[in-house]
Image 1 (cartoon, rainbow, N blue to C red):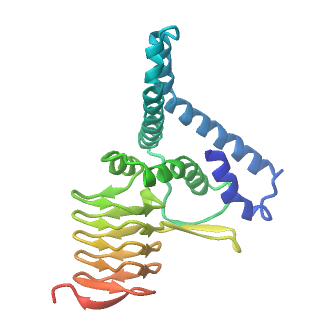
Image 2 (cartoon, helix red, strand yellow):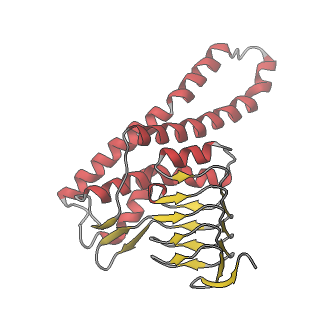
Image 3 (cartoon, helix red, strand yellow):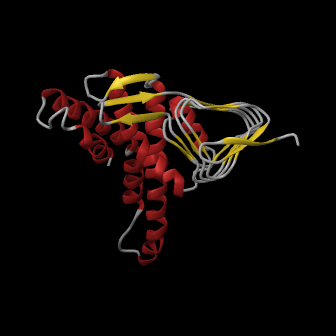
Length: 253
């Protein structure tokens, strides 16, 4: 799952780094081993659950079969939660992060490789959390990945780069809103990471797009569908709308 996502995001850079290059091969091996280790740890609770069911389940007793749908439901729940927790805790434990800056889009670069690993681990579970209710685990998971989230804040959209994102207290991020902490330039073979900071008491409307380097000060409303461009600063106590986002009204009026 993670490996396939990685291969997709690397296909466009093959002209600079052929598939048979030693660096790419070594990088794939390292990535595969990391994903194998993390996902294997995430399957431990599921394995113990199946073992316990196997020991208790008697196939000769007809009414035991009535519980098969319940058994399968809890198996799915255990897999999802265990994998989310395992990946988040391991990333947090080893403080696995990438830093702001512009880097060559190659395996040899340390920050780029860290981004590839985190992208491969995080993306599947991010998509799961978009459709599967996990409650408070969502914000906890983001914090494990290095994101700052203030108290009483609702993250309803998509965070592409948790360790590049900071959201203050009492802020609401609407559904389908997206925050990008990175941007790739395939023509130059580079990837740029730039932090996004959102202040307190803000509202990010549904479908809004926040690009790398954006700074949204306190008490700002970003209208639905607005686009906050790279490195744009949104001043406090204003409502912004449009593409690119422009102030349309003072929030206090």
